[in-house]
Length: 328
Image (cartoon, rainbow, N blue to C red):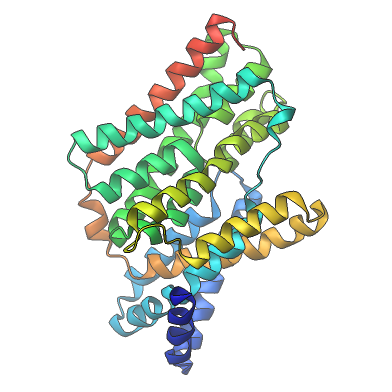
């Protein structure tokens, strides 16, 4: 309730000057462009593109006043964007999968999460950065990072660096997986498990699995990992809340929208709502990117990249061992 009251108060205090409208229009254009490009090339995550577009716009203009305008609107855009983005989260019916596939996917995602978090901690990355990389690697890439960031409150530069790193690792997987499949001679069905259980972004899973004609199977398996975001956000809400067992309203609304759209809404309506939800959330990422200093992002160095790659490889090795053992 207090979060709702705070949001309303912030929204009421926001000015609506000509510069404000120009800034909002610029951010909306960034979000819309990111979405349209992602349609042409699904491997490019719209949230990632919007963040990059925002960073480019902010660092090219270098207008401190406009940066403050963008920063003022983030507290309003972010909870609304997270809530609407729930329609993009499909909670799968696990009864439609073979138990061994569900088990292998959940174990792989958990191993990636734990490995990335542990390695990040050993490399002395901040706790927030470690959580961002772990969630982005183990669950659903950029979406997971964007959804959990309001809970753990990382620095803007950590948030941006984590998104860029996760995208780079995912694209690496899309490039090398066909080669792995060729030399190991795995079947298309098993390749669907490899892609869905270990690749980061949905778009990357789609592109990778299309080569073997198992796009639907791989995306269904990826859906198991995406659904894990519901549990993760609840746990993080409790861990990072100022008062125990308090969950912010926008997390509840996000989970409610995800559950309602997955269970009750006709697929046609869900498909029609997803572009709006994606553009809205992408616009939010553009606003965050606009306020980011590129120089500070570069200071993250190579350690987060090492943690993300190493943790991802743990998941790949596990799935390949399971495939090689004949369990799947």
